[in-house]
Image (cartoon, rainbow, N blue to C red; front, side):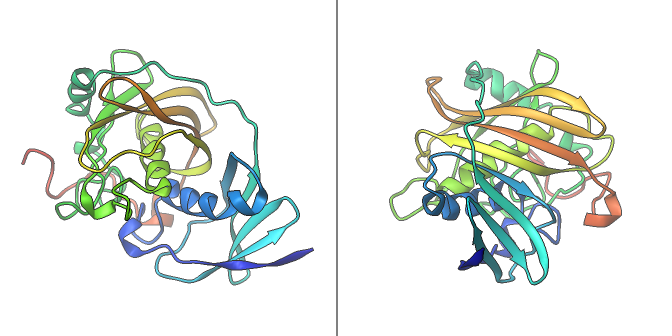
Length: 255
């Protein structure tokens, strides 16, 4: 039996591809709404279709699951999970800064306007998370300085933004031979970041097969204390489907 559980609107600011929401943000926004209703500390979100921007979507409960619908189209499903999330070693700020200078997206970015990892955004509009390769194969890291434009009333970064920050690094753990988007995610947040402080995000590739990447990601403060961790699964998509580009352009960092 299904019944209505409210509505959800993802604002245009929070895009990933040009015409749909950033996957991590969409998952985080839905997860924060669904977790309490499901009575679960940790949930997993599956994205079935690109979440639209600036459109009211319906949240429906069905037993131990929550679904997000856009009319007759199923967009996402949320369910409780006890899936273990492996801990990652902390990365120092110095190593993360060196890695972000090697960010592949500076030369080739399928979605240069992405709210999280896109550089083609107005100042203080996107998160400007630019994960570049570490010494270890399949590992990336970068620094992140959340600004006041994303602050909650308590001065902390909202949980859905943390989900977004944990999402995009995983998409850069393998070369972008074709555009990829988030398909599934689960996250655990122990502490919310404070606006105006610098953090480190990192991700490690766990498996790659048939166009799918599975990654573990984590968020640390400057002292190496973990604030949050996640597992993400990314899927290759047709560039024409989401308006992806193959070569980025715009206001690049440092330009």
